Length: 596
Image 1 (cartoon, rainbow, N blue to C red):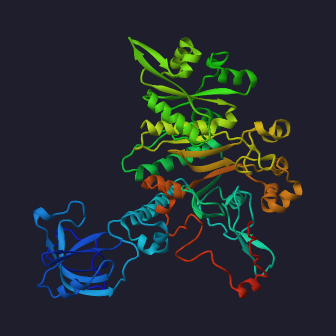
Image 2: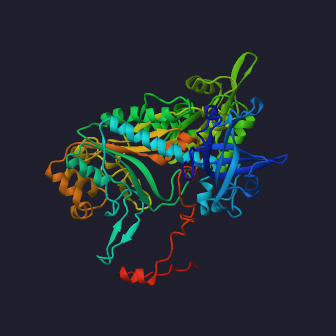
Image 3: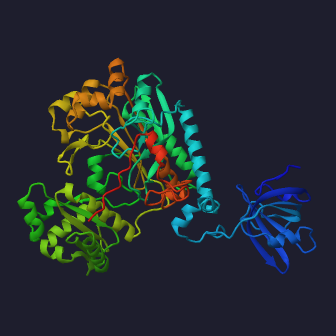
């Protein structure tokens, strides 16, 4: 028999009754039932119930063991009585009668419980992550993560892609976040950067003729943490294809990712044909470029109903500024003054002056609008709004006014709030879509200049001619995102492969040809030697896994994450470098200045 085990703790079944076996694992818990000890023994695979009665030679040792001790048990497999079968366990029809127990490793008193998984402070969970990972839910999440990644790899291989590994030490790249810099000992005073994404390398692979690339790629960004983005590092399914249009990318990735979601969705419906929604339409309908389509609320413009109306606030804004619009947020079943007042109070908490509303009720067989707005604009306009939005008695509608570029985010948040408060969101499904036709440039209020709205290596729609002759802020890009349940899970584009167009695009944001050649010399040179049309995308693995396991936080699907302060409490990182290390790198640490 093997030194430690003949079976795992999930392997034994009723067919094994009568066998003498050996198991090893952790003591999940010990229960004393009238002098008979029951030990739940756990390993990576599952749990087996072990019984030690006072007549067993193993009983004395069984009395001594405690939770999370590592032990080896030899014993006889017996069938449980019919009334003690545990149908929730794979091994629930049997139990192991202990004949010999060997303590392989005792455990000190635990700093956090493993059994039962009660809420516990995050700093303790992260400092003792090796214990936290023994908890069933987190352990199961990590296992499912590996299975999801394996399914992705299999799907990509079936679609004719090959996996290539790109460098980790590279040059700084404008991916929209801060780089992690790595000082060079050999080239003192110079720095490598950890890749924010393998963007340039995967494009260079297309120029090199590899056609269909993918990689489960680690990416590094020195960003502030938040619930849907880990600090430091994350992983993405990175994809690039040659001789493709954006439709080819969508048609390739959509069925593969749909299949992955269906495999791990536990029977929840998954969108089979992802709608393709232009960015401008998404903003107007949902107030977001990552809409949760499980929320049935769709916003509509109702400006004309308020023009020259009795509601002087909106009418005056419309008359004074041609850019002003009024958007309606219809709320089915929200037709009570109490709910409308709650929404208004919420809007004020967001720093808004309020949230105008109308709600409809039936009186004497007739549906009529109620609330201050309804009184001000009159019955005819109120009815026209109701008809346009398809509302009825018991429904409500909220209104936001101003220049859409300034209020659309708040409108989207109000849409989300109303959908959740009224329980309109179908949470037991995965709703996918592509958001397409993103703006190529945007205005940076902070820097008072034009900047790239998304990936700077994207192809502008209309090519060089549009870039040369049209207003930069009117340009669209062959740029697209994949969205699921309100989360962006992928971003991609058709790339610009023309050196002339590349220079022109960067000139619009203030970089010269010399700057382009210095910062992106590899790409610039490559494009002059025969670059195929190419494009791709990258799916965020962490977010996909988070959605599929139903976690609320990315730390619940990651092995060894940092905390909210971007610290690794387990390894005590980041830490100070030694004087010797700093001398070798020709670096000196300047203490941060104290703020007054």
